[in-house]
Length: 398
Ligand code: BGC
Image 1 (cartoon, rainbow, N blue to C red):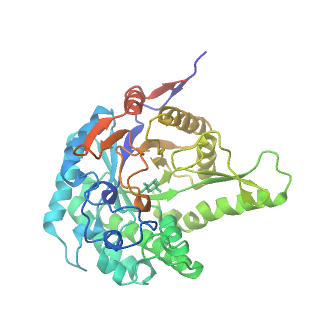
Image 2: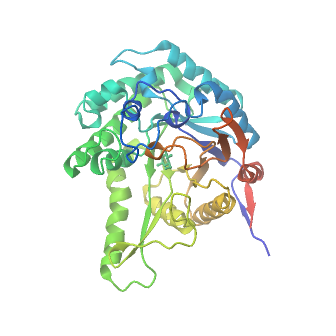
Image 3: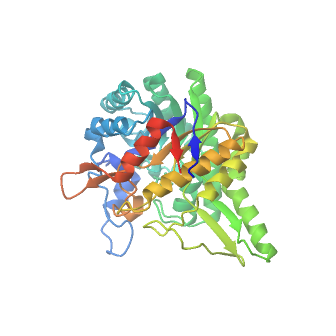
C-alpha cells in the first residue's frame, strides 16, 4: 500500500546554483587567481573553472529548464567581483546584466532567491585580508546597499552570505580554499566578522524596504551510534550540533527573516570517532541519511522562523540514486512538517552539473547533465522528470 505525502499549495519548488560555479570567466575573483597558479597535478584545485557552464550567456536556457521542471522559484547568486571590480567602483554593465537575468527569471514566473556572496571574493577584497579585516562588514555593506538600490523587488528573497561557517572552515581552519590559512584563532575572527557582516547587511537591506532576508547555513546532523554505550558519543554529538548550528545562529536571531538550510551530511559518532554507515553513498563518498534532515529540521524549531531548504542534492553521475534521494529527503521534510516545522520550500542542488570548487567538474550534482564534450549541451536526466512531477503535483506517492 502506498502513502501520499502532500505539500501545501503555496510550497516553493526550486533548484539552486551559484554564479561562480556556473557563469564562467569570473576573472576578478580570488578563486580565479588561485586556479591560474602553476601547481603540481596532485594539488588542488583539480582544474580551473574556465567557462564553467557558460550560464553568464546561457541563463535563459537554464531558466527554461526550471520552467520545464515545473519550478516556481530559482536560487542563483550574484558575483560581487563583477558588480564591484575595484573598491567603491561599480560596473553598470554588469549591474544591467544581472537586471536582465532577474527579469528573465521573473518573466518566467520564477520567484528569485538571490545570494549576494557565494564563497568567491573580489581580488581587491582578498588583498585587504577579506573576512579577517575588521572593516569587512562595512565594505560588504557598501556592495549590499548597491545591490538593493539597483535590484529592489527583482529579488524576492535576499541571502547576503552563503554558509558563513563553511567559509571559515574551508578557508581559515582547514586552509583548503583561498586564502589557505589554517588557524583556529583566525577562523574564529572570521566567523565573528561574517556574523557582523550578516547583521549589517540585514539592516542595510531593511532600510530600503521590507524585503525578506535569510541566513543560509550548511547544517550537518551528528548523532551517537545506535548501540553506543560510550557517553563521549552523546556529548560529542551534542557539542558538534551546537557548534554547527546554534552557536552562530543564536546571536543573529533578530537579523533572520527565514532560515536557509543547506543539508548534505549526517555523521554518526562511535567511540568518539566519526563512523558512518556505507549503505548509500554519493560519488563523493557522502553518506545519504534522510533521517538526518528530519532531525535537523526538528532541531531548528527552536528558532521559530520559516525554513527554506535552500540546498539539498547528491553527486551521482549515473543518476542511479538521485530519484530515491529526492523522494526520501522530501518524505523526511514532510515528516518534519507534520511535527510542526514550518518548511516553506525546497531547492534541489543543483539544476545543472557545475564547478564543484576545489574538486573541479567531476562531481555531478545536476538534475541536468552538462555535456562538457559537446558544447556544454544541457541534457535532463531521468531524475529531472521525476522531480518535475513532484513539483507539478505538490505530492509524493511512496
Ligand atoms: C555549497 C555549494 C556546493 C555544495 C556541494 C554547498 O555547501 O553551497 O556551492 O556545490 O555544497 O558541495
